[in-house]
Each structure stands twice: as structure tokens, then as C-alpha cells.
Length: 258
Length: 306
Ligand SMILES: Cc1cc2nc3c(=O)[nH]c(=O)nc-3n(C[C@H](O)[C@H](O)[C@H](O)COP(=O)(O)OP(=O)(O)OC[C@H]3O[C@@H](n4cnc5c(N)ncnc54)[C@H](O)[C@@H]3O)c2cc1C
Ligand SMILES: Cc1cc2nc3c(=O)[nH]c(=O)nc-3n(C[C@H](O)[C@H](O)[C@H](O)COP(=O)(O)O)c2cc1C
Ligand code: FES
Image 1 (cartoon, protein in one colour):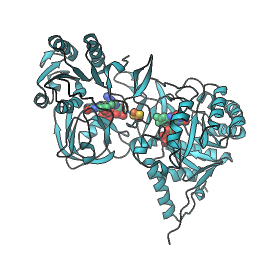
Image 2 (image 1 turned 45 degrees about the horizontal axis):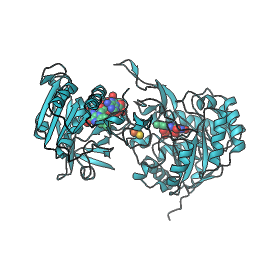
Image 3 (image 1 turned 120 degrees about the vertical axis):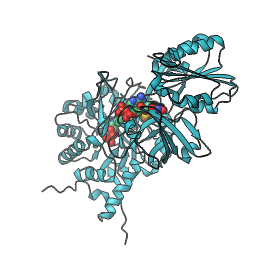
Image 4 (image 1 turned 180 degrees about the vertical axis):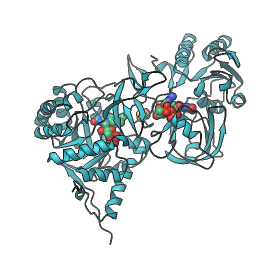
């Protein structure tokens, strides 16, 4: 599960977002949409822990996979300076990815911010006739990978908080309009917690199943240390589940948002 | 001629094939890391801290990265001692490695009851956790005064039918005094250190990073403190000392042996390098080979302090 991946290509997508194409047969051969990798940003004690980053796209023929990340702090800043030919210490693929039901005819992926990245491979892998992508960004400057998402969806809708690009408003508002026109079979969410909380509630109203991909600060990344938990329903009670091992993808109805 | 290297140690009746143990709370019940390496390579595993009843633990975020280390505030999330016995021991027993049950309680009575239950279970030793900084009741409250330690360990020792290791907190004025209290009360060994109480703040939001506000510090940044405490305690008690705190490789472990430890535990380093436990064993062997040492026991207390 641990390997050294060679950086094949780097691409800066906007002022703070980067794509890395990494070669690793171990990971590319078995990675599923929604899984993530846990990677070391540098040697030594700086940015000590590994950073969890979703698998954005897998190229099984070339044994490569792509990750896309936004620079937030020390670790991602170091990652953004990595060059082709460098090696990265990666553990993965990790976690439970999205469930794909190929009997579904219409699916919607709804993502916000850094949450859009894991939805890409899901669109690529799903065989539904109709695949709608609703992607939310803060403003025009943050919009990335529009052409790529267009290529793998039948309909792409972009929403920005300030209306500087696409539709003005929230992803969940756009989603409700889609549902009112035609009820999809399944919706997949990944993004800020408030978006997913509103989204899950919305879908319950319309009785549509959904999955959500969650995020939390991690330690081991493999299920041993119990630091990365979220509240999940259990019988008539609740429990803490590990996002790294029981998730990051959960059924929408199983999550208790605070 | 290549010399044979002996890594075996015996700690108060607990025999270990090598002196490297996975530290409690960092290794779950072994299942996850068994996908990375053969658990037979470990001297022992101290399992996730157990309590009488299942415990949910603290709200997330439960971890913050700090320079050269981490803060955690898990708060002893665990399935309870009965579920451990039923579901986890059979898994661990497939391996030839010592099982150490790390036990916590809210009250003295709970510590006693846990010890009774664990004495009947198929484990090799009990590590009494008198040192978790992340729970409100019990634990560190007992572990931070000699009186508390005396009281718990005395009562527990009466019912213990397994080697009893007492795990000490560094969050005290004088750890030597606490270690002596554990020895006086009948502890077979002491292990130290548990995490150091600390905190981290996000200045953008003006909020603490951990939902619990404070957490326990571990990893390379605590090693000098841990080493000092292991040294001081080893100088003052006759029972074996198990050292931990920031150990990441064989050389770190050798430092702890020289300071007086008979065995070591490795925790946080494994999050970054999942092979840290195995590499620590290998590193100890390498050091011994290079320095012509045949028995790891020779290293314990081998510090030269003129
Ligand atoms: C399952 C999962 C998938 C993710 N996928 C992506 C992705 O595809 N693209 C992307 O840009 N980001 C993704 N993230 C978020 C990414 O992990 C953080 O942005 C990153 O760890 C920040 O590290 P830093 O050193 O730059 O920031 P710092 O703030 O310096 O990090 C300090 C510590 O906090 C942790 N941390 C900070 N923010 C987050 C966060 N939002 N989630 C988890 N840990 C955090 C870091 O890992 C590190 O341990 C994902 C997170 C998770 C849990
Ligand atoms: C996430 C985490 C959980 C822990 N849980 C426990 C526990 O349940 N019981 C216990 O005695 N110590 C627990 N500890 C403390 C470790 O066993 C060890 O004493 C400490 O982390 C110092 O060693 P290290 O620097 O090698 O990690 C925990 C530490 C971490 C990082
Ligand atoms: S990060 Fe350790 S259990 Fe999830």
C-alpha cells in the first residue's frame, strides 16, 4: 500500500490550484473513484504528517493517477513546488469510494471547492446515460477543470457564490431546480459541510438516495488511530466512524451533521 | 565471524522476542498495520486504551499537527473490554507477539474490575493507563499524585494475575516520585511517557484546532523530555522501565536503552512511516552489529555519565 510514485507531469490550474500526474502501478491498478492517497510532502519533520488528497483521475493504461489540490498551508505549499521526475512517498489507495449502480440512468454529482476533484473519476467510470455535474466555486477566479468535467458529463452547471461566472447561488439551489425538472436516480456530494448537510436534507425531501464524501484531519489515514471521526447513525443511537477507513464516502442518510 | 544477536528481553515475567512494542492508541488492535508488515516481527502490541464499557470519545477535530509532532484528543474511544476479548484477542493471537492490554477507568473500582476481567483473558500483560490527558474523570487524575497512584495500583495489584505495567504521565512536577509510588504499590514495571498536555490555535478563526481545546503532544518533539524522564526514573526504581516518546528509529531506541529502558514503545512515528516499528527493530540490530553488542540487555542503563 505504500509506494514511491514518480511525478510525470505538473500543471498549475489557477493561482492556487495544482494538478500532479503520478506514476504508480500499485495505485493506478486498483484505485476506485472516491478513494484517496495519503502523501508525504517532504522528508524530515517539516509538515510532519502525511496529507490526504483525493484521487481525481486514474489512467489504468499508463499506470498513472492525477491529484488536484489547493494550496492551504505548509504541506500543500511544498507539494506545489514538486517537479516532474521527483518521487513522492504515497500510501494508497485508501478508504471506501463511491458506490456505482450501473442500473441508474440519471446521476448528479454536486461538488464545491476542493470537493469537486474526487467526483471526476466517478463521472468517468459511471455508465449512466445522463450524468449531470453541478460544481460550485467561490468566484470566477476559482473555476478550474471546466472542459474536463464537460467532456465526462452530459450536462455541466457551474455556480459561483458571487455570480461572477455561471449561475449565481449555491450548488444545492441549482440541484433543487434539476430535481424539480427531472428526478435523478442518485446524487453524489463532495464539498463544504454546510453544502452536504443542506443537500442531504433536500434529497430526503424528494426521496432520492445520495452519497457524501467527508473530510477530517487525519493521523494514520488507515483506520488505526481514531482521530478522523464523524458522527454516524447506529440503530437508535449514534457512533463515531472513521472517515479514513469507513469512509470517506458514506450514505447520506447515515451521517449526523451537527 | 558474524556474532549472534540476542534481542530477547524479559520484563517482570513478560517475555518479549524483541524490545519493540507498538504504543497504545497508535496501533488500534493491530488489524490495520497487519496489511503493511508481519506482526510477528514485533516484540509486543499495546492495544488501544480499553475501558469497562464502550466509549465514544471526544468530538472531532481530534488531531493537530505541531512542529515535529502532533496533538491528539481522541479521549479513549474503544469498544469496551468485553468486545476486545471477544473480537480482537483471537485475531491478535494468530501472531507470535505479546498482547498488552492498556486499561483505563473512571474510578478505582473500575480499574480493579478491568484488571480482574483482563487477568482471565488470554493476554500477556496489563498496562494500567494512569495517564490519559484527554478524559475528564479517572486516568490522569489518579496518575498525577503519588497518593492516587498508590491507591489504584495497591488495589489493582491484589487482583492482578498478569504482569502489571503502570503507564505514567509526564504532566507532573516530579515523575520520579510518581514512579516510586507505583513501585511501592507493587507495579511490576512502569512505562513512560504518555502524551504531554498541550494546545494549538488557528489564528484565522481564533479557535482552538482541537474540539476538546487541549490535547496530548507526541512525536519527535517530545523525545528529549521523554528521554530525560526515562533516565531519571530508571535511576530511582528497581523495576524495569519501558521507554517511549518520539521514537522513530533504532538509534532513538538505543538512546532510551542507554538512559535505562529495558524495552521501548513506538507510536506516532508509525503514522508517518508505517514501517517505523519494523525499522526500529532492524535499526537496533544494526547498531548492535556495528558496535559488537551481542545482547540488547547490555545496552540498558549503559549511559556513560562522568
Ligand atoms: C479524504 C480527504 C480528501 C481530500 N482531498 C483533497 C483534494 O483532492 N484536494 C485538496 O486540495 N484537498 C483535499 N483535502 C484537504 C487536504 O487534505 C488539506 O487541504 C491539506 O491537508 C492541508 O494541508 P496543509 O499542510 O497545506 O495545511 P495546514 O493547515 O498547514 O495543515 C496542518 C494540518 O491540518 C490538516 N488539515 C488542514 N486542513 C485540512 C482539511 N481540510 N482536511 C483534512 N486535513 C486538513 C493537514 O493535513 C495537516 O495535518 C482532502 C482531505 C481529506 C480528509
Ligand atoms: C492518537 C493517539 C492515541 C493514544 N491513545 C492512547 C491510549 O489509549 N492509551 C495510552 O496509554 N496511551 C495512548 N497514547 C499515547 C501513546 O501510547 C504514547 O505514550 C505517546 O504517544 C508517546 O509516544 P510516541 O511519541 O511514540 O507516540 C496515544 C497517542 C496517540 C498519538
Ligand atoms: S486517520 Fe487514523 S483512524 Fe483515520
